[in-house]
Image (tube, rainbow, N blue to C red):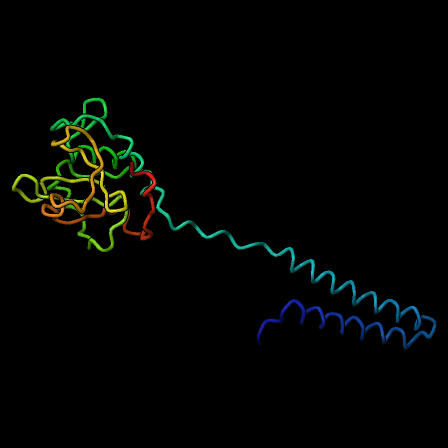
Length: 207
């Protein structure tokens, strides 16, 4: 049997109470007139109780935000390293960064442990179609004649942040220049980001 709606349940209860009172009134003529007024009041009381019950139903919990807070924090932290000197083999803001040192440091702050070299990162992480890139993904290049010799962090709007040996510091570069397009090898997504598919719009951060 299908469950009754609150309104149907109220009507059923009202009819039951009214039938019982009619039987009582039929036994004593002295209560027939007060009975009419009472049943009218009973109907109003039942309906008000139902409306109050409907209004007090708990609200469903809010849906969790689709945006990945880790993605947002990774990009912010990477951009905060702009201007720190490039130092081969280093991986701290105090001593400087090489390309993979920067990526490992930023992700390590958020509990994501990545391999130390760009090549090892590319080998360890799942490949990603460039069409589905989102901020926080890793971009890889061949800059030394060897595959996956350079890595940066995609920040949106076709830009990425990386520790550049040519510029001597952590900087932001566009992906669509002839140099980076010609040396681009692919993208990877750290495993913690696999469940978050919403692209973040952060172009306002790009100088």
